[in-house]
Amino acid sequence: MADAPAPASKSCSSGLRDEKARLRTLALQQRMQMGEVARAQASAQAAHFALELILSSPVRCVSLFSAIHDEIDPRPLAVALRARGVSVALPEVVKLGQPLLFRLWAEHDPLLPKGRYAIPTPAPDAPIIMPDVVMVPLTAYDLEGYRIGYGAGFYDRTLAALRAMGPVRAFGFAFACQQLPHVPREAHDEPVDAMVTQNGVMACRRAGADRL
Image 1 (cartoon, rainbow, N blue to C red):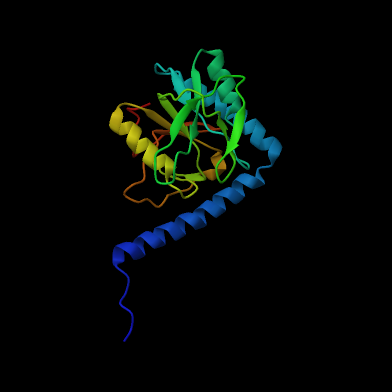
Image 2: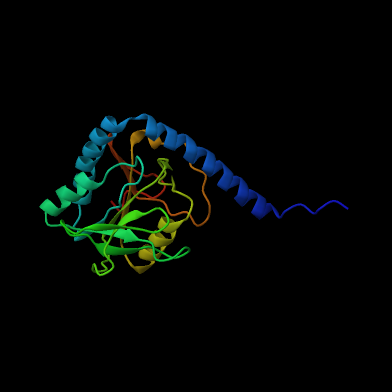
């Protein structure tokens, strides 16, 4: 007797994950091919556009991220924010399946490698802080605000939790070459409000510009 077919929902979910994995690989190849010098220049240009967007509304604290591999570098943006009196935070993984928490990252505070990927993170005694703006890392994105991360779902859970508590602005931060015509999406995917690259700011159609 033949095995019964898998439920359609599970098959569909598996297919979406496979397609996301394929698109992630393509976008990461595009990012790698930029080269180190071009990535550094693009990071500085993107920081300029991000700063204008962030400061367009009152803000006290912005969460950035520690770049891994050849991700866009948020350090120029951190310098510019601190120069304008805005606090900077970095995310910390608490546990798989849980939202991130955010710790204050002061200018001269050391960062310690933590977790499976040894991502630089503020010390365990750094104050926990709630950001007004979250700059979201990604591997690929589309102009409706949907993104492909690294597969663990940390930012989807985190944005859902933050938005349930009150207003928060979430902006994708990446290189222009990581844009896709369409990102496959699932019910739990949380869109960003805008994308920031070295080419400028793009309000996301699906998320709307009202949160910018």
